[in-house]
Length: 100
Image (cartoon, rainbow, N blue to C red):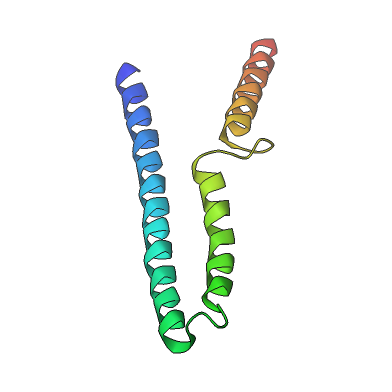
């Protein structure tokens, strides 16, 4: 039982690390690509019209939602809520099994 518990903790930790790696990869790509687009924008029209901000805004919205999911910032249906509900249903199932 203890070995199984350690293994499940390891799997959860590994999944968490994978989520963080994906987020930081997305963030790094965002910074590099938006910076490159800003340079292209500057050299093409000297920021007369800053069209690169449209890409920054669109991708930024996606990045914000990714951060909310990865860092569990959703107060309504985040991972903490999910964990509580799972525990609640498991206790409910356990109680029902005792009465059978």
